[in-house]
Image (cartoon, one colour):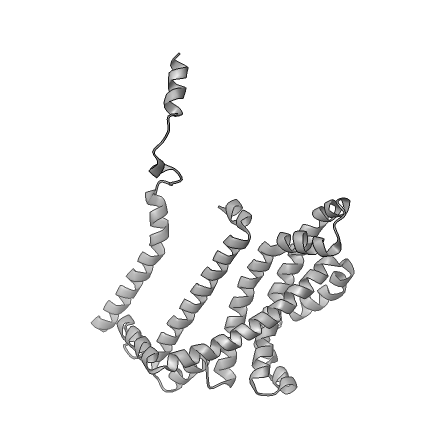
Length: 279
């Protein structure tokens, strides 16, 4: 009888406002807020060091001064112009190079012959610093925007190719036989099995490709252009306007943070099983 009473008490209905809620522990709250607290503490220490004269205000302007310079750049439109130029080059190069990388990666992962044929070529070309081939790219495609976009596309091509190829190779070995037993065509196998199975690695390659392409975009703008965030950094350094230099670096950091956050959200939406398994 005691067991029955205990079971009845455990199976009693719970209030609706508590269903589906997770208790907020102090550990999880600290884990989420600790990076922000460290960042705020570092900025306050920086501000106080400049105010006290421990750091040079010329080479290490205070965060409040950098924030003021950022506001001025937003108001006069120079930051928006530079940001638009950088994002245009980055998006065109990333999408074009990434799309070709995914397509070639699918083919190399699907066909063992193609994989064996082109894998040594990929292994030889991938480690070459992409900014080092800028003169060659400019000889082939001219000194205009085309050469810059081609270099950005090349930098985003290899991470997506390699990740896609590995994703296909990990997926195809087990599920190909099952799909053949059920009479699935090649098109259905590619669209319903192969691509979804390799999607986690493709999205991971997208994150790598974005970061690599972003660095190459800024490097190209530092060397060859008069527009963009990279060109703004170089001009600020040449004229010793270090407030604008630091403000541009803040914008670059926020862009990288926002893009990686967006890719993480897309990954959680498209491959929820991967997110649940990792959590």
